[in-house]
Image 1 (cartoon, rainbow, N blue to C red):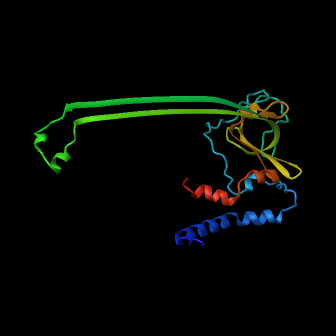
Image 2: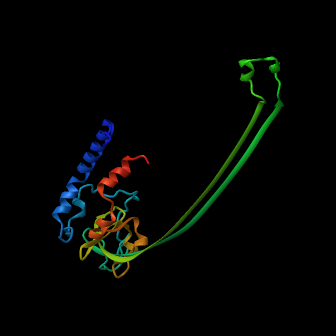
Image 3: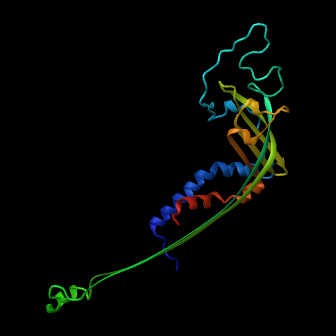
Length: 252
């Protein structure tokens, strides 16, 4: 015989299925439509026109008025005498060398133990032996006696090693009042049915740009570096949307 399912459980299962269907409906349709097709590359677009784009605002020094000295070719505040081909204005391109190496090894261990005991030695208080019946059972055999023991043992360790070495061309999207450049670059590489993405964004100083119009990623302020991918391999590595919904909703 089949056991009847409680009504509250049916409601819960229906809500979970509905939530999963709404969350993954559009994604499932897109995946079904792209079966057998190679993942499409994103079109080249202006980053400043993308939804959610916000101009960078940073603390700026007071502007300096450019002044020229008589019979001099040098202008006060100029960074160079001759003009070079390094990126300097909106739309210029520079090469960002991403050289990221991170290694961490942390171990932590904590042990704590505490034991306490208090004994008053009082076995007869206020004529407790004269009491009989239920009244005698109310008082304990020994008064004001306590015992406690506490023990804690905790261990933790972290081992991490990451390395990323590549180059990406970035476009200057904004020039700040002090001359610093806001750059953003995106690179997509498709190999068979997998697309690898590299995104680099941040603020650079013109002085840090090398003579060959390159800059190291370690010299980028507010750096945002993202490296990932999408395609068949990445899709297999991700849990199904139903499992993701259950992971969020279940308390254990």
